[in-house]
Length: 531
Image (tube, rainbow, N blue to C red; front, top):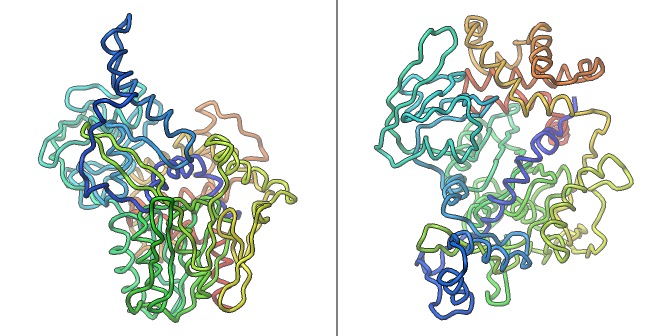
C-alpha cells in the first residue's frame, strides 16, 4: 500500500495550516503584549478619517483598515500576516495547548453538524454526547439544514469557561431530539499524535505541530519509551507545519550534547542570536531517524536541520517545505494582531532553507503545489536540488544543501502508480468516518472480544461487505466510481475504516497506531533502524 497519505490526502489541510500555524515560528509579543494604537497623524490614518467623514456613501471602517493592512504587507513575504479579531482564537488556540469550549471534534456533513469525537475529559463526553450525534439546535439557533462555516459553528459552541450552552441532538434509533445543557470548560489540545514501542528497543513518536504543550507531551512520551527499553527512535514530523521556535529548540536539546548549536536567527533590526543545547538530553546517544515530507515546515525544519547538521541522526522522506523566516506578533487593542517577519533562521552549518519568494505569495505557494504535482514526473521530482543550492559541510564531512528546504539523507520517491482520486472523495465527503461511526454504534459487541489496541490491530480484519457498503454510500452521494478504482482502493479504504474504529474505542492516538501498520514509509523507516 502507498503510504504518502500525509502529503497526498491531507495536502489542502496542511497548506492551510502552513498559512496559519507555520507563521508562528519565533512568536513573541512586542513589549510583553502591550497593545498598539495607530499614530493619530499618520498619512494612512488621515486618509481613513477623511474617507470616513466625507465620503459620499457610508463605509465600514474596520473593513477598510483590514484591506489597507493586508495590502501593506502583501508584498513583504509569504508569512507576514494580519489576523482579524474574528480569526484570532482560531489561529492562536491550536498553539496555546487549550481553549474554552464543549470539547468535540465535528464536521459539517451535508448540512448536518456531526460529532466525530467527544474529547476525553471534556464536558461533552461527561454529559453523554457520542460520536455520530448530530447537533440540530444550539442555544435556540437551528444549525441543521443551514450551510455554515466552521467559524460560524465555533462561535456558537465556544465561549467563556463556566458559561452554559443548551444543545439538542439527533441520535440514531432515538425517536425524539435529546437535550443537553453543557457547561463550557478548558479543553486541552494535543500536538503529539502517537507514541509507542515498535519492538523491544525501537520507539516511535509523531508530532503534528509545535505548540505551548508540545515539550511537556514529548517529555512524558520519551520517559515512557525509555522506561520500556528505548534505544532507537523514529521521530515523525511529516505534515508538521511548525509552531513555536522555543519548542523546536527544546526538542532538539533532547538529542544534542550540551553546547551544540541548534539554530541561530538574524535580521536587519534583530542582531544575531544563537541557541545552544543547554542540558544533558535524555536521548543523546541512541539511534535517531526523523521522517519529513513536503509539508514539514519551519519548527520541524529547525529540528531536522539541527540533527542533520550536527551529525546526530538521519533524515528520511521528501524535501521539506522550506520556511526559514521568523515572525513576531503585535496585538492591537481591538483584538486583532499582526505577525511580521523580523528575521531569518539558519541551521548550525549556516544554511538558510527559506525558498525564494521574490515573485509574490501566490507564486510561492503555487511552487509548493507544483513540487508535489511534478512528483508524477520523475524528471521533476521534488527530491532534486533547488537551482540555487549551496553546499555546506557537517563536522563529519557530510555535504548538505541550502536554498529550499531540508534534503533527506534517505530519499523516498513517491509511488505514482496509485490514484488517490476515489479515496480523497470518500474522505472529503466524510463517508468512511461516518460509516465507521454508524457501524461501531450498531455493532459494539464485535469489538468487545479484543483485550487491547495491540490485539485489535493484529487480529481485526474488516469484512468485504463493509467495503461494498462504503462504496455504495459513495454512489448514493452521486460519486462516479469506476470498477478499477473499486479494485485499487480497497486496502487503503479498509485500513482507514479500521483506524477510525480504533479511534472510537481506544482514543485519538490509536488511529495512527493502526494506520501506520500499512504505511510504506513507516515500514521502510523501521527496516532502516533495524539494519
